[in-house]
Image 1 (cartoon, rainbow, N blue to C red):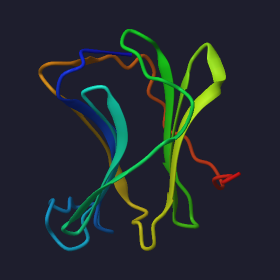
Image 2: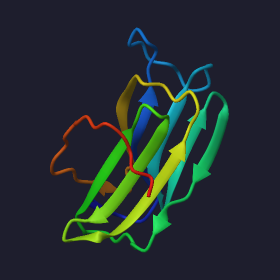
Image 3: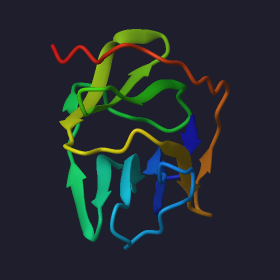
Image 4: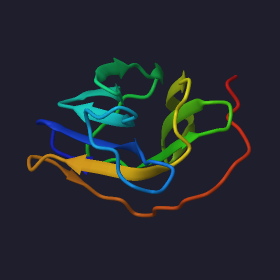
Length: 136
């Protein structure tokens, strides 16, 4: 659940080196993929090396303040990355971002950033492993 509609918040993954060391933004090998809510707009915020871009979600869910959502962020061994959001009490209505990203690292850490003009509440944070992403 979030409050506020000014500035942004993000949730996603930043890549790590194979030895677990952080890769700094702007360095070769830096990857970042995150859902970003900027003002009232949702997008995927993506960075690869020095490239910065946006991706767009598919679906019919309209995000609203003070509403609980379930969010899944993940990637598989086929270089697919997914972000899926749905309202807790209406799992059929969803927003989904999927990208096949060649050479997406398999070592990462979870990131989150929240503007001082917003709040973000996380009720449950669970890490799980799965075999693959169904792209249907």
